[in-house]
Image 1 (cartoon, rainbow, N blue to C red):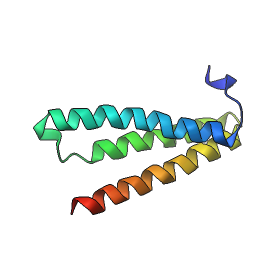
Image 2 (image 1 turned 90 degrees about the vertical axis):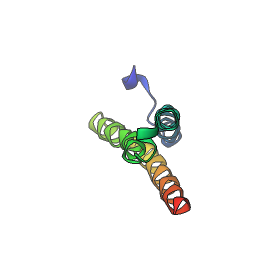
Image 3 (image 1 turned 90 degrees about the horizontal axis):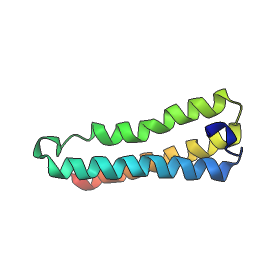
Image 4 (image 1 turned 180 degrees about the vertical axis):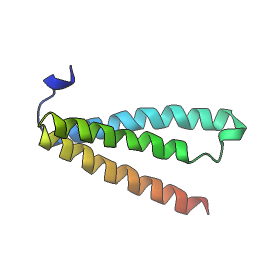
Length: 89
């Protein structure tokens, strides 16, 4: 199924935004339901790190443009996490 994805930067960007966003929303909900995990920001970084696995896979199957889109989305998620941490202090 993943091999049928077009080699397009915008497709990779969409995948790179959607998948971590979905994981982040689940983790965010769990963090606010379980008090012990309220300060576990490493879980958020783990959700963003999923893009590294996607990036490695897309470069392995020679879909470099899709990988570049995922890389761009990863930078955006990283900046959002940075601003989140700045706003907490």
